[in-house]
Image (cartoon, rainbow, N blue to C red; front, top):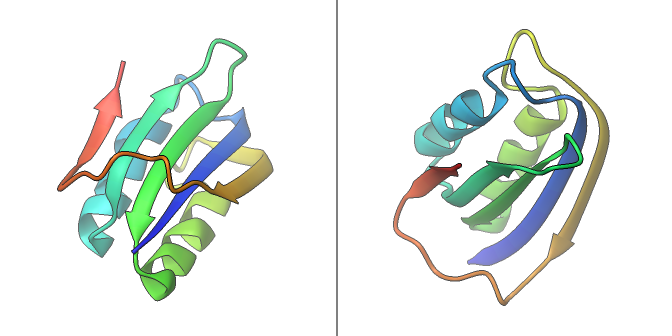
Length: 91
């Protein structure tokens, strides 16, 4: 399993972005979490096999929320992300 830390910014807070990210993660079988950051960005910790993670990333880049917009996207592999058996929205 691959573990990645993703940060997105743009119109990603107050538009249902976290909730829709969870729906996409649950549909694809991605584990991890999503949370808002104080700077207005959103951070996602994602755990999945390579193919599933690639598909998840493509959906996130195009904003899973119809009202959202991703202007900036960054992703790094991060083996320090704790294992999880579900995908959580963190507040």
